[in-house]
Length: 151
Ligand code: SME
Image 1: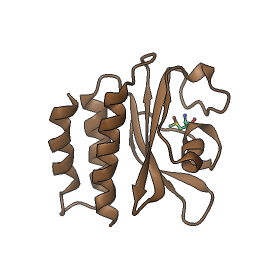
Image 2: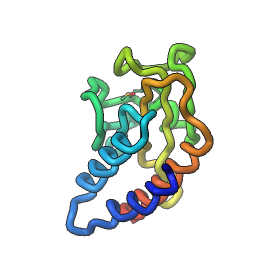
Image 3: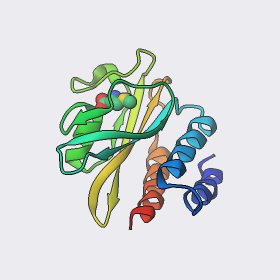
Image 4: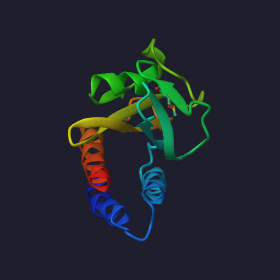
């Protein structure tokens, strides 16, 4: 599944006739449709110079959490740690922001441009404990490709 998606996402990201936001939107839609355990797929970006994240393109249910302060929730923690954060069971997390009661698990992978953490991809799953190292490697690859648009 991820092997097939790699060239597809490269094609989307190299659509020079589309805006960066439209390419990211198409990417979110592709992932949500193609990966059964991806139920919400979105990007958060650092909001200017502020110590907060702002929601970018996403696929799935609308969320109230369009702004997340650094340090808050899984996303806010990744903004500070610069590390992948895999959550097999969201109920076991104290510092977690619930977006939907159906969500069981979450993965957040930071997005680096020239070594700087500018945002992240955030994926929610309604399946318990669905994420493996394959997801991490795939999402790291994806973010490396996304970063090329910002260089
Ligand atoms: N659950 C996230 C908040 C973002 S929503 O999942 C879309 C968190 O704890 O940071």
